[in-house]
Amino acid sequence: MNAFDLKNSSLFKDGDGDEIYKFIRNNCSEPCRTDTLNYVENLWNVYKPFCPDLHFAKDFPKNFRARWWEMYLANALLNGGCNLSKPPPKGPDIKLDLNGSTWVEAVSVGKGKDEDKIKSASVGSIDPNKTILRITSVFEKKAEKFKEYIEDGVIQPSDKQIIAIDISSIDNSDIIDHDGGHNMIPLICKALLGVGELTYSMPIDLDSDKIGQMSSHYPVRDKITKKNGTDIPTTNFLSNDYKHISAVITNTEKYVKYPLYGRKFKVLLNPYAINKLSSNEFLFCHSISYEKNGILNIKKN
Image (cartoon, rainbow, N blue to C red; front, side, top):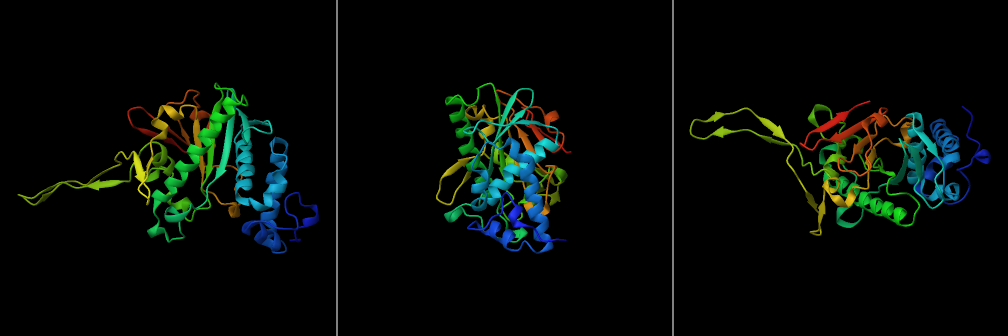
């Protein structure tokens, strides 16, 4: 395979950039890096006509992962059959037509700071609560951003609003974020619907020493307490404060696997949204709907 020609690249240039960007660019003669460069350039060629940010290419070197997520998300939505159009420069990242104007704000989470920072760890020692805290944090910030868009007249209150969260930078996020199989619950449900950790119980009669049948359930958990003692709510989708958000998308696929189609996306539909979305609009990925009797309905692609 021929080495990647940086002279013809729209995104990879000489100069400074973040660690991932420089690692890929500086090893462009290696076949695996050439594949990555071509993959990223192809994402950009598809996304460019729909990109509202005039400074996207200039900002790309210093924010590789966040910019990659925007491009991959747009490509996946297009491949999934969604109709895209170009948002205004000061609007959300992506505009869709899903039975009306639908806006998407994309955000790629980091590992956090201070005591709640997510450290590299083996699978057995991962604390999913720290990842849940990262999800709730960026969700609240982007939800407030949507309110600003409405106040400024950029979007209308009747428009559907989606927050798309990439958690692929967190080690083993693809392992701890379950797809709903084997009665396991995706992280986004634990972050926004107040679903606790899987609990097992087994009745024991101390008088007769008889042991009953083991059972399992997910208890309600309406908050997670940070190391500094602050309580963070995990029931935002059950709150009136977030009825303007129609759905949340999460992603754990990493750029090194060259994903295109978003088949591992998880879309949690807000059961109390003012402007609702249907699972039929996300047939290319996993969609999760919450029934008011507490039942989660997970549809896989």
